Image 1 (cartoon, rainbow, N blue to C red):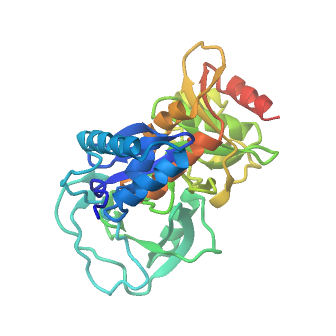
Image 2: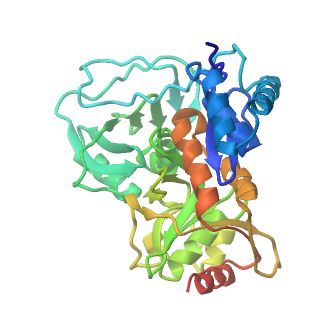
Image 3: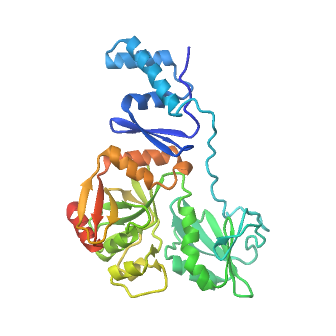
Amino acid sequence: MPTFPQRSPGVLVSPLGDRAVAYDLVTETAHQLNATAGALLAACDGVVDVDAAVTDWAGEAGVDRADVAADVTAGLAMLTELGLVGRDEAFNAPKPPVGSTEDEAEGERASDNVVTGGAVTGGAVTGGAVTGGAVTGRVHPVIDHNIALRGPDADVLEALDTFLGTGTDAEKPTMFFDAHETEDGELVLVTDYEWRFPSREACLRQLTSVVNEYAVWTHSCAAFHAGAVRSPDGELVLLPAPSGNGKSTLTGAFVAAGWDYLGDEAIGVRPDSLVAVGYPKRLAIDASSRAVLNLPESDSADLDPAEISADVTRLDGDVGPISRVVLPTYQEGAEVTVQRLEPHEAVVELLANTLNLARAGQAALDAVCDLAATVPVERLIHGDAHQAVARVSTQLV
């Protein structure tokens, strides 16, 4: 008996209320399907028997079997035309970062690139991992990874750990960054690459960017380009937005209002439970944002949330389920407006701010669709971050 064809490589499908969403990782294209087309695509696994499925569907709908068979034929043709089935082009998922692990052999490690002062220049890593007399710093949770710095100089590790500000001794490292200072005062940081900075201070200016690279390498959940905060009453709000929309400034304004801080760059959301996974890095704040938050001027683009509120709680790991999704856009002089989105509108916005669909695959798409279908998703336009926080806070009550 004939079976349904297999979905094309890299094609994912998830339910979305009375619809379904198909995402093609090869073409990076999303398709919203009706429930029938979604069920048909889900059946395309190369195993399900066509005749048996048609009989079941006809019985469930109480319609003539021949009509269902005709619809299946037409539906398969449509899915084939869209490239969702029948395409031979392979999909190669991005390889995860290697970093250093506890089981890594001593000696030099090869890498694709050497990074000097933060710029990729090409070449091979020659420094290798620090292997003699190394000490290990605190563990920094970065969604799926527990990153620890290690090296021969405890003073260097303390400086880097203090700057990152997310250290804990309660977790076991899953990845190591090897760090040491040379006789010339350079600070060398070896991850998947070798990063060479002319000084410890230069390293601190770019350390957040280095660690950020690993935030999106998560496979267990969706990683959103978003801020996230928790209200004093325990409501978790996700703030996805493209760069330039005032996401970090708004997140900082929530912190100033007494909210807890999960991060302003990459936030994980687990499928089914919709639990937020915090990555409470320093905020990325420019001079204009400092002015909005009534902070003194600084040459640094990174801001410890404790500078906004000394009582802030930084939340990492699995924090709790998302209560609300707010999509912020800053427009100078704009009054605060909030517009509730329908699930089919919300999923488009969420997909645009998902960082790891290619890496997490089905888990990421499921989380996106679960959020769009079950959690209030709103578009927030504002010209004042503090007024926006007040509006969001009022609507949570």
